[in-house]
Image 1 (cartoon, helix red, strand yellow):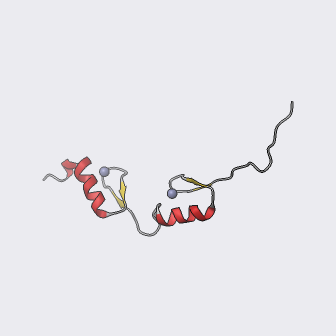
Image 2: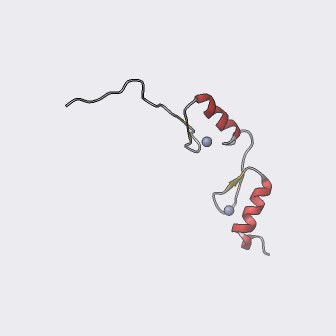
Image 3: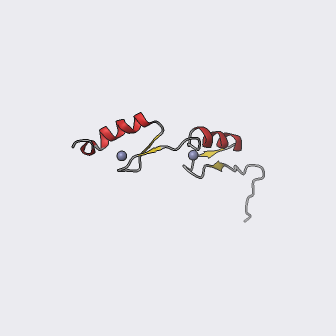
Length: 73
Ligand SMILES: [Zn+2]
Ligand SMILES: [Zn+2]
């Protein structure tokens, strides 16, 4: 019995520290972190749950949908 070691097939992926997405190329990961994962501008965090929106309008829609009771006075 012998351990089989396959040379060259080690797929080493680069994973994003923030969301855990994995990428094969470091340049792709860098681009993801800059463009998709934020980093440029802070996301709009919902005050009542963990939802985060990239655009303020999206957060407003989310609040209206999921936390309508917060809007009624
Ligand atoms: Zn990410
Ligand atoms: Zn929310």
